[in-house]
Image (cartoon, rainbow, N blue to C red; front, side, top):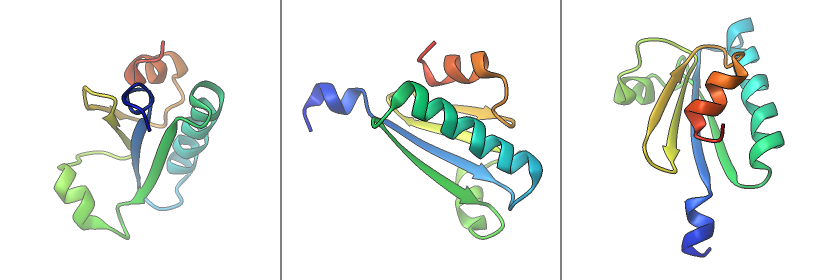
Length: 95
């Protein structure tokens, strides 16, 4: 992967709390935006904080769902069900 391609690659982690309606909405909303706007330029890991509490502790999460955008920099966090599309796009830096 070239440096230019690496700069365009999005690495995202979505922390959810099981199969709650809010968590399912967050996953669906984020996947829709990723497919529409990022096509094949992203990696999305969905982490259930009930199954992997150590990862939530490492991130010092205080709410879920929480999206952590690791790349491209700067690292950003967004909390909520990702239904506010404009806020999500701005948080991802792809407005």
